[in-house]
Image (cartoon, each protein chain N blue to C red):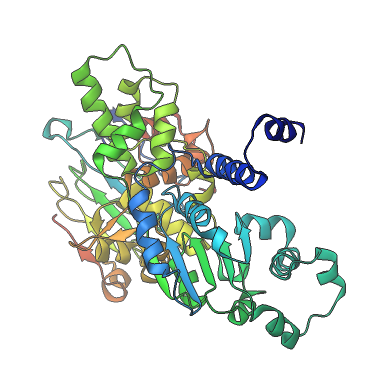
Length: 102
Length: 375
């Protein structure tokens, strides 16, 4: 994705429950912070395999997000301080996840 | 007949001289190959002819392999034109995969046997032909067989055994996009058709194009871009040269690998892929072209595909290569075709498509919330 500059609704991914690959990237530095979530982000699909999001604008991933299928997580230059609150034990033990830059 | 007799009356030459002349003229007409199609093919035809070793008395088979539109059929036809006169029996089955799809395996087998044995198809249908009979009839014959566009081993499985009975000096030429077919059919040599080089590509692109509004410099830049997109594929070049659109716009589409409908290429590219290969093909076309193979494999495996099996299938079917740097590499026009397949899933509603890569469409879907629940 490129050249995205708009405010998105916190439930924008709700209907995309089968989404497997999500990549938001900026081809130019001035395009960072393209998508804003002024009201936060409520939901990310649990079937996601790839989550690559440059300049992720929020301090953590949605509380409801279940990363059990995740294969690659890449949040370069993000505002995230921690991925999620609490433990996501299953995620840590069963998947071999490739962590990118956080 | 009238023309001939007048000729004969007017000339004072002997009948045999006249016949010679007529034969020469007729051959000239028959042999005038379509020169447009033959641009850049001569060398390859010669190479295949030398692999065929026409003089040698063994039975040889050659597979002509290459991506869709690269000119396999044109080359096979040219070879046929050059050598068919030396064979007692010549059989050409064109577009075999489609024939099998339309008419069925039995009809294609009957057709093949009737041509090889030189009898009517209904004779084949009503008689139970014994192997011993086939062998005795065929082993004395010097036969040339061209099986064009064998996409699947099963297309020829029903009569493949017959080829073993052919007499000394017989030749079998098979064209396919699927290299695996040649292995399964035990073809002796596989020849990969090469793309046209840049000068020949430009020559083909130049034909019939009317881009008079462009300055020579711009024309040169744009035509080089289009040639790069075509990767020297004659069918793509012919499409680009005949397309009724401004090159400026076209080259923009080409640069961003926008979906492009290329007649003939579109219909054939996905033909014969299983679900695993098809899904991987479309994912690479939309997202993963020129990305590290192992990274892509990890994601695809995670999505429930069998990545490495799929890669192998796509490489065999000449839709994909693995580059020296271990990247999955798809030719631009094939990538644009894959994207067109996804675009056509729902031309009007991007939210209904299986894959989105274009920022404008994604913004549209995000803002208007038009995604379908099942996608």
